Image 1 (cartoon, each protein chain N blue to C red):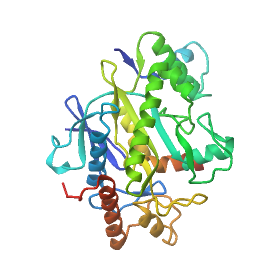
Image 2: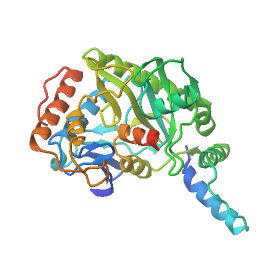
Image 3: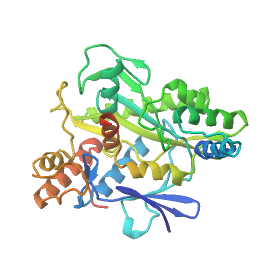
Image 4: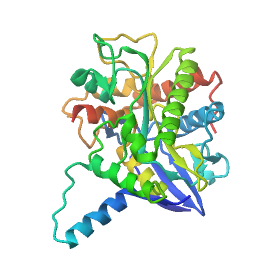
Length: 279
Length: 74
């Protein structure tokens, strides 16, 4: 097993022709990875991702080869994946106004060239979900690209398929989560092509590290929304005197760690409607 | 199907232009990327990244909501 790259909260390994994505228990707030892990977070998000891959496999094939054929030390938090030719487009679906989508709306009244009604506020639900692709280019990736840009890059047929599949996955996922009080405000998907040109869903799927999860009970448009799982850490971090939200982050007290772990488990159980069992 | 990395093509063309006495600069990286993708497709291949390069970019930015917030506040 060869380590190919170690990221902020996940690592990627190669095993022969396969790729292994390994999630850690690290957690970040305000874009800073904190020094204290949340025990089990990597497993919970990996299992949630696998649950979604299985539920949504009828929409598009995915890159999962196995969640069990992985080294024992990574059991539960690693996925053996197909090695794909990855598309240089982040496929983002937004059902609510937040983050860069909100920023773009305030500036132009549109996101990725899609005009939106006037009078929407932070956290507002959009009339219908919008596809807001972004480039994965190493420079200049702070801008949206339009659906026409994607068509120019990848061809009209593949661009249309990405648009359709992204919105369908978001629509299905958001609908399923909403039944249990979880708002999936938006999500980012990544895709690749097989050697034969088949479109395949890659990376992780509908986890809180690739999507914004909000509580339906607490949802109030017109203000920043509360994150469903790591809000304890966010709230606590804002009380840490002297921390200016730049690295290094402060260590997390044990009661906050425990509360956050419990919240990750609760979100898993609410969405999957199954009891969390340590893998 | 054949695949080629559009960023690699941009880097190679940048070097080519430099060797011909030009002084290329990344004035519009999205336009350059789009142009590279169109050239690759026009030559019968598909623009795509090696998965390690693609995941490196994703993994380095961390959780997507953080990255999206960061882009919004930039």
